[in-house]
Length: 384
Image 1 (cartoon, rainbow, N blue to C red):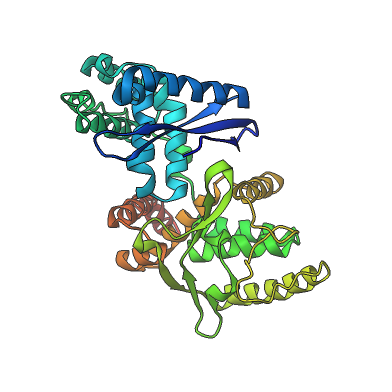
Image 2 (cartoon, rainbow, N blue to C red):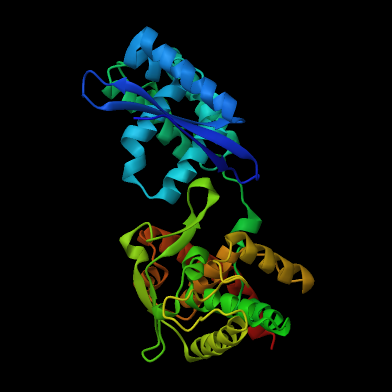
């Protein structure tokens, strides 16, 4: 098999190179040994890396060449074990986690130098700085499990640590990442007053359906049944390799769902479809085909996630509104469903939660907020 060198771009816009080097055959399995590495600043650096790998393999053999350090073992684990078990968007995020957090701590360490003490100290440090420290610990443990499977380690030091508990910090901004009924209506009226139908339609749909941002961006007109007032959610727009936009099915089966839509939202969508067709026909684009995405750029490409985020931030700033995120509209929808006395199970199914606990957490938050206001309501009633 030939060696491969290819370019890719990171989110910062810089170009890097990745390699896939063929080293030979694994004498134990009879399979090809291909090693993938990335992060090279130039093609020359990538070519030198391939040469070094080949020399190392010839001099020291398979295990030492590919599993000498944690980083080399990680590459082997990623390519031969992990990559084919998850969606592209998932392994791209996993690569980012390793490159940004795990490899800086473990990458250059020899496997036999990774002790329980070092693992404990590293996870303690992660705990102080990152909310996802448990995920980072778990991925590190999976790589070291592979070392045990290959016979490179006797046991897994990461599994012997005591997982620290993160100090409870009340993040008021995060806990308030939703609008009340009045705040939502005011937000939507501000969006409408800006006079751009596309944005009003997007934010109305997000707020009145509880969809995830990626699910809304992946929608096609065939996904809406105007007659039966139904919306089918069966895909999501996400990021793949080289930061490219890709369409995927939802992560879990619960993400596949059909939900009802109210008459006003359906009417707004119908109006948007007419306006979209009128605007794009001038560019020679037929948007009336069933597979036409509902929300696109002016050149009829998928909208970037950041485009919606930036637009919402601009609306909030221009109209001096309470700051929430785009995902906060989903939280808003969920909260208002509970206020409307929709059952927990119905909310779970409508939002596509894979775990009832996710729904319960929001329910608990809403009911706690209601309790806080009970004293004010009582006083207002008595003093009328």
